[in-house]
Length: 212
Image (cartoon, rainbow, N blue to C red; front, side):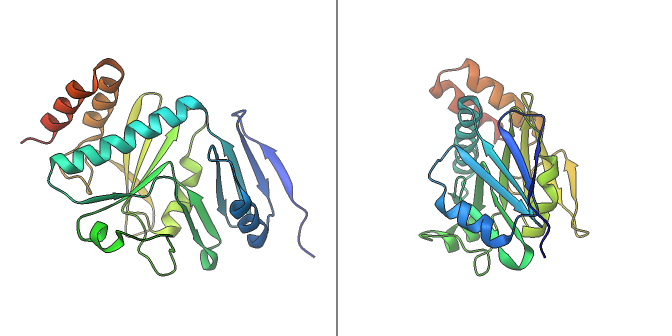
């Protein structure tokens, strides 16, 4: 007999984690979720359900715009899949990142995809986690299982870059691999600029960040 489901409240008011949840139950809840502000993450029986705040969504949109603007300034192709659901039944893993991206040839290959299927489609090259009232470090093993090569984590007005190693663990690094030459400190400053500058001036700062 399966263990009964239990729930643990996390330090943040907008997050709950349920334990001993069947894969089929997670998929049903995920498929029937009609609230864009509600995100789910599932890994090996643990289901996190989070309702994101307006502040969270504001940073999410800014980072999504920043990634695409940097790619354009660097002459790179880029496809954004937003907070699309990424699931792998064989890994008992599923998540909705705050944003995820493909670049270059992979962007071209995935363009026009109506529904992302990680059983047949490659995993995104970059995923973003915005931590306003909770920490997403616990999700790193889930992202590692799905094979996401790079994670950007934004917390307390600082953006930190993590890279997946051959050993299947994330290490904090100074510079992005998907957007070469762009550092975590530069991204942190650009996001601070977004709060202070009109859009045209912010775009000038973004373009300047990509110059040698």
